[in-house]
Length: 191
Image (cartoon, rainbow, N blue to C red):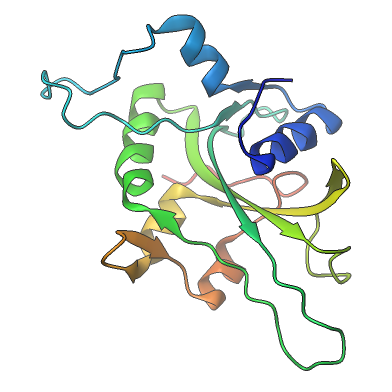
């Protein structure tokens, strides 16, 4: 397993391994292929001012005809909501402007058999309520749940969250409608 800085990425990698899903950690591959000072940019930017933000994993589809995924992991903490309190926990699904600019370029570079997607990894204080998530797992004594959204779907419905920080998000209704489990329900190869 790769040395990952964030527990969310370690959790996602553990999830992939436990489910025997083939993947490549982009940090590992990049370290092996590029000098430390290298910046990957598209042609037309010879000065390297607009370097592409790296994503986290290439996840290969076990299902023929389904796209491989270029996965950007987004870790979020789910606040504890006492049962019977009548309150709902909010599932944050915001992303950075760098993600929004870079992921479609990566998708273009990799070609038609690949789709960029966000994997939202939720760290929960305890086992999430039944029916809330299809994919719940334990990694390093922490509970996690995962949902994913294809970048193309996200981009069609995203709204500014913070202009100051340059972040985007989906409404709760859009997130519920667009997000999918990583396994079991294949992502459509949207055109």
